[in-house]
Length: 356
Image (cartoon, rainbow, N blue to C red; front, side, top):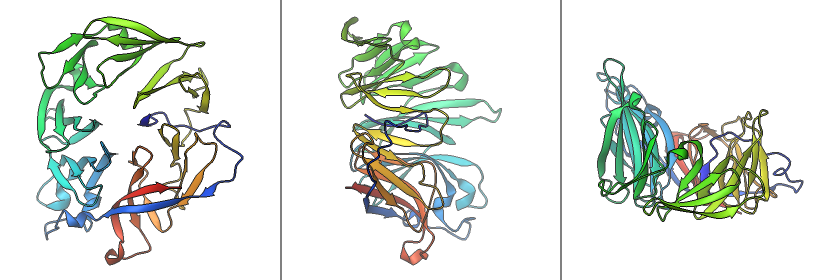
């Protein structure tokens, strides 16, 4: 399971082990200075190019490719310009160098990666304040961008659950499975999916959670099969890398519980907490304190039964975004405040490997 928990979580007693926290270690594998990519002129209004960016997310489709999405302030680079421009900054060498891909729209809203291709959406604000959205496909290897669609924001159109070839297309609630490389290949999907939790798998079938049943649905043949019957009802299905997990919400108090596919409780969470956790299989990273006065992170390889802690000394770190690749490394927007510019000071995009 590779994702950022969208609901902020406070891991309760199930995660907070009585075992002592061990000293963790991080190996800094990249400290990228944006002055390497942008040469400021006398027309610039900033001293540090990195300060001109509003990053939305840091994403790693694979171990060597890193994509930063967001926009840049055009005025920061040229005082006679104004407004924002959407950008993708792509590294093919795990953060040691980057290439800028500029877009016509002002904002990049999200990017859904696979190993070879990434689907992303942008948005322009037109002169009459109407919002127009665009969906693009990025080739992660050639960095070629192809426009898939454009539509007004109010049209209620979306592309979701991309698996690298197929995507689920929604138009006012009408769902289809579409092959993005052959748009003539499409398959209608049941309308009740709008009220169910489901995931698109790598073999182009759907895993659907229906209360206490897990169903595999084949859109190409319009067939379905119950593959597991649970002892209890669940509200949400999480699926990635061939594993699925179950979530049960605690209404009306908020929060809930997280289970594996054997219905074994892994942890509980509270939806109104400010704690932030990243998960990949049995790996958990707690980055609640990453932007505190004394920044630190905790990470665990056994669902939080035991923890490693690493202190990020001498750094200011932006609270968002924070990116991850599996249980391998973390991506941070940070500044060393106890060093000068010639000694790794100033704003940097840091990548650090987790070490036990």
